[in-house]
Amino acid sequence: MSVGYTWVQWSPHKRVYDAVMAAGAVAYIAAFVGVGKVIWTGAHSISDEVLVMRALGSCGFGLLTLILCIGPLARLHRRFLPVLYNRRHLGVMTFLISLVHGVVAIGYYHGFGVLNPLVSLLSINTGFGSLRTFPYQTLGLAALTIMFLLAATSHDFWLKSLSASAWKRLHMLVYGAYALLVGHVALGALQADRGWGATAVVLAGVGLVTGLHLAAGRREVSHDSANAPSAEDGWIDAGPASTIPEGRARTVCAAGGERIAVFRHAGGVSAVTNLCAHQGGPLGEGKVIDGCITCPWHGWQYRPQDGCAPPPFVEKVATYQVRIVRDRVLVNPKANAPGTPVEPARVNDVERSGRASSGGASDGARASDGAQASGAGGEHA
Image 1 (cartoon, one colour):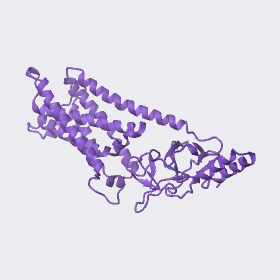
Image 2 (cartoon, helix red, strand yellow):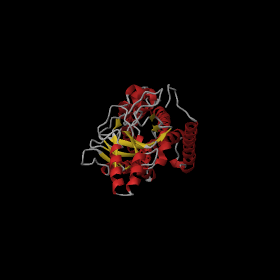
Image 3 (cartoon, rainbow, N blue to C red):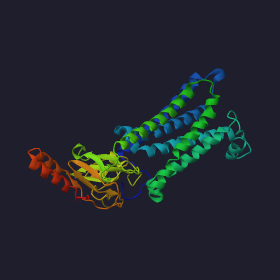
Image 4 (cartoon, rainbow, N blue to C red):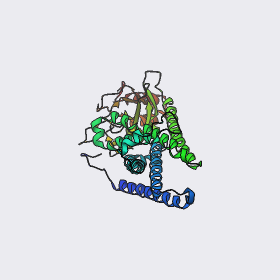
């Protein structure tokens, strides 16, 4: 989080990450050209321009495949969250590499005629009715146009201006760009390639992206099914309070599909929407730092008791009523307006009452009463 806008939000960690990724891309392109000049010789030799073009194109395609894998990987395991944090920088770098590929290709194939190179690209080949003659370069140009739109809006200024939901929908176009690139490669380079190596690599990349998204989706559906609302009064049973680690959350799902993050913090339990107001990041996968829920994606913070970002920030998220009954955390699935204060349900009182209940029947009755009364924010508060 930052109070004002900067052109590039670099931190020491981001600088190292960007430097490593840029060095890796340069090394890949240099290795592709070097190896290509060694293995493609004689009658199969390839010009330097085409070698560079293929190196840039394959690098851009590989990076976009990697970008699309980061999201589901982060949902499947927390160790990938630091990579997710830097995904926007990687996306801009992928666009720049793809742009250079496009400029070299258009200049090489369309830059020596009487027509404007772009006019030439869009008008010379009209064989849309055949896969063998399909003008695959138009698919690449369409994908590059989408990637430009995404790179140009990969800044918090546009996120704030467009709203988080509209910005999110816009950036879902990355999947359309990837589909166009797969068509561009399949109808272009792969049709000209006599071997199966490049085809196998492309299919493996597409299969990896598809498989990871299916695995992440299946995991979330399974998790949501295990946290269906209780039938008694519509409140959601989030499980024993004692099993929620301090400073962490358990995520439950309401009947309409809204996910709710139930945090244990400072001897209490609070619930907020699982969607960060920044980019819709999963707050329930974050943790409480300095008394604030911290989004695992970009570090935006909110107070658990009212869903408000700490001053001077003004962002707010929805809160939910919470109560604890016999150590079970119950959440009212009806969301409060963003920023609505809700007194945390106290855990320590319930745990003390629970320990006392093991001493006898009369103590057990007091423990039950204490548990009902602990839901300060709920119906029994």
